[in-house]
Image 1: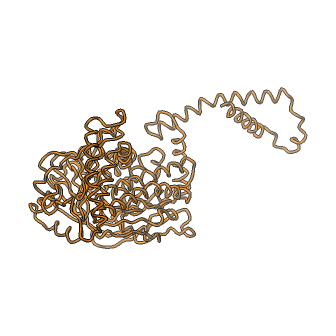
Image 2 (image 1 turned 90 degrees about the vertical axis):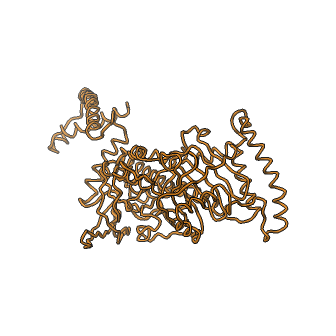
Image 3 (image 1 turned 30 degrees about the vertical axis):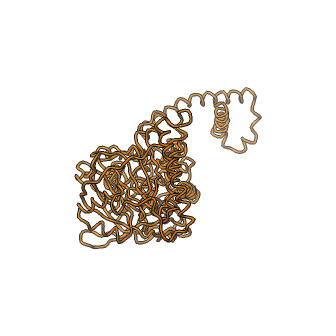
Length: 567
């Protein structure tokens, strides 16, 4: 503080010397040296002026905070920087027809980014435009959701819920329809091992919420409208100009819009940064010349809605030879559940075409492991070697005894002085499926990652940057994590007076996004390949691994924490 005052005194002295000096150079050159009394008097006046101005500066700061930063009790460095940046960005560097951020892709992830940019104090001054070829769902969907839920759902982690709450969308979603799950049980159809995660040992009310994608999208679209996000007319992206030599301080998105008379009109949007959030088949990514690599699983994920024979708030997942079968709570009705069944192309198409009664029968048998889905744990294949058969015969009884001991230990409170170091929850028999209702569908599965997450004045988020297997329900969660990471990088850049479209800013996002998403992508792909191994020894190894995770408390809780988004 004293240093700042001394610096202000010196500056004021120089200022007064400049203002009060004689304009005639001859008189300046002939002016006698200043006396000590004159110098002391001048500096005393400067000190008085600085102290007189400090209260005024504080009043001005409060006035700025009150009138231009709503809800601020006092001015912080972030708010002052954002306030100044509003004029630097919008008035000096932008044309009248340009924006700060153009988000291409008005789905859940893209709309969430637009909302977060407009709601956060550091970025609410930015001008944000949202572009998509389709109209967003109407907010009326939240007021009266259909009695049968949409089969496309997401299992949102607490971290994702916190982001939706921050932008003002979660309250509407929660009021409309959501289903929290307090536990998750995973087991293999051909082995005895299982793992069970519980929200109680995590100190949380639930592990996550299952919500229909259409409800999330409608709530975000409503929030975006309230926050002043500019939504372009439904348009298709036809070209992208983000060449460093030609576009300079802007990237330009060229759009084609079709009106009611099917007459195509073209337009362009200039932006400091373009964000591609247009899905796995991203047009923005292709137009930017960014390649993606990955592989198909030659499987489809079948989705539908069923009714259980008892209430359940558990997320169930049974790994079958063709792929996992997940049964998730989906509405306020605890007996209604969503089905996500990974299977071959032919089998998925067959299941979709079944009547509701036959489909419910197939799901019930596969879920509870009866009929043709009741695999014999002791069965071995003729193609297996004698070593594998003998190894499994020796290892399986030992594993079963170990699991029995660990489950009994769990009932007695676990080992480790009450810390739950060793001991896992016993297996709970899943409920039965009594009926099916609503529409069903199936979509092909693949994993894919973009070679780069950024280019000149361009960033990719969500499925445009990475596509994952749905077995962990992490697709939307990873996309919302991208939203949080990109927004944080924007905030850091704005606080230092930088350019949000600069290579330095976007490279920081890419580094953070890759380090956050690659481990999860590798884990999901590894699990898919591990559970696809069709051998008795491989089945035993999977069961033993599940039992080991279930038995070791710190490891189980660490995995649950990571899957919950680090919450």
